[in-house]
Image (cartoon, rainbow, N blue to C red; front, side, top):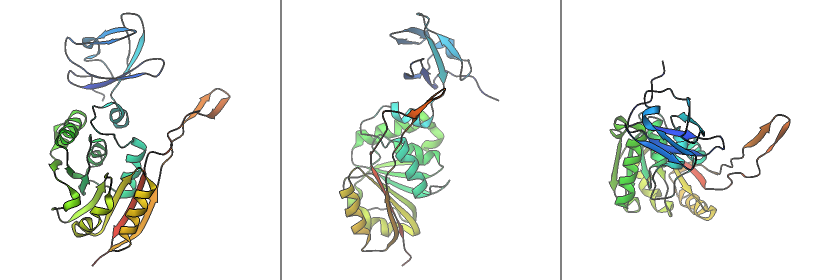
Length: 257
């Protein structure tokens, strides 16, 4: 049974042109746009998927935001890992409920959200305190306080080492991930997976070179290209724009000693 929208909840308002607005509902609040305004009280208690009219008679549809929609519109300090790449990282890392994951370079928390949504227990390393705070706020804002119990962010530099042991996965979003390779080898369980997200193929190549020194196997590097299609009656064609290269996802598995 679906539950009504509540005060304090995040909603996504979409108009007929596909524009999207992320709004936190507050009793007595109002959402304003160039096409008029809508009182939050009109939405609170209503059903997800309902359509409302602004004061200028523009139609808005009300949704609870998906994780992908939230990531693209949430407050950020650092550039986020895009949803298409987060999805690839989750699959390549084989993240499972209860997995102990070190994420180094949490940024604004986009990838943290995906890892936590998949049920992982995440230890984050971040060198910037403002990024760490933003990531924790974004996690709490979308997943709630229950998820924060599985999320710990520390102001640490993984280039200098990883204190945690017995990790199932190590996920890196760093300029020089090869510096972390020996530390990850010491912290991962046998069969554990190292995943690194890099914008440059030169970074990926250097990471692969570092992994060749062992104890790693099954190394691979991939990228994800995202192209949508226009479908309207008999008019079917690829969209003129696509999300091309954003980054490379490199993985390797730790061998037993």
